[in-house]
Image 1: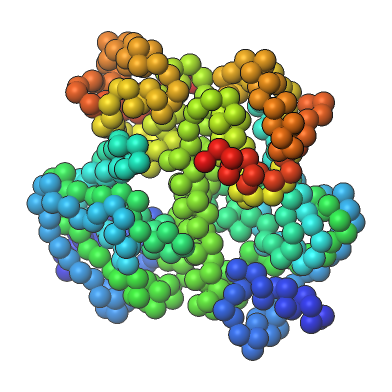
Image 2: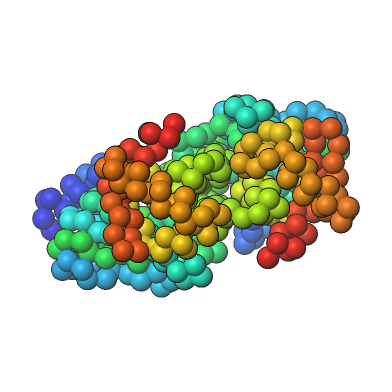
Length: 225
Length: 225
């Protein structure tokens, strides 16, 4: 095992606090599956059952969440180290909420749910890390739910994005028809178009056919505080 | 220990699947604190640190979540068996998100975080139950975030309630000035008043001064599907 992979895994919130000895011990018992993907390869698909933890060791991945009912999709980018949906391994909805694709060439390692339960879960620090990660996700969502608000057209568009984004910052791409977005936020197409074009002039979004690209969501959020 | 308390605790999602033997074993090791409250007594206050699990053994409690910034409050009712905010014991936000009051005379039992970590967490079933409960909460919130929508005035009011309610069904009371609600959902006071009065005529809400009472949120949700 390469030393870099080892160190990368230890940087993950799930493993933080584990001493190298414990980690060596874990690695000895838990079956790790290594895999390489080339840029644009699909790692998992939205809706597929989540039966393992997938760790991104290096490179970048893109999540794509599609709302089939309303025919739009939101894309986000994640760098390493990263774990794909630790909150989809348990609970009532154990299917991936998004499709994950390699944006660059990447290396991943996966650990089956069985090993998570039977081995990793025996380490107090791992257990506590997992409880903290799940609680955090629930807490962040709760904050968003209470702070969601309806305002002018710009605030409505921002709120639409913030509610649906996993990360509050970074690049997002929303593939949607302007009239569909307008309908989803109960606005006229004209108003939505006007606001988006204003934002484009300020360099906060880039518009192309059926696509709104937001280079940094946090800049839009900051502006609307 | 009364047999009824024992059975009540075993009905909780946190303890489900534990055999009576294991549970007797746990009870022998974990310090349980019993307490009675009279109707209207406060059990915990919103913002107080969550350092224990509080189990409602019998009776009913009311949660009150106050949005100090916008000066409104939402009330919900919970029956036994119930655990107060297991998702606030871990993570970054370990403060209660609501105030909990006894609605009737009640009995509770509390277990300190230390015992949860050192004793309960040694039982695989308890661990798995806890992971499932936290994952579920995160998953339910995620569903709400993606399905939040802005529509006509009635849909906006309903969405406002659904996003903020812990339980999707049952009685809710929203203490708010009509003009504050109108402003929060970007509507006119006249529109909000008209819709609420229509809903009152249909028996779906009851209006009084600065208060909207919803006897059963699920009836409003069902109507708007």
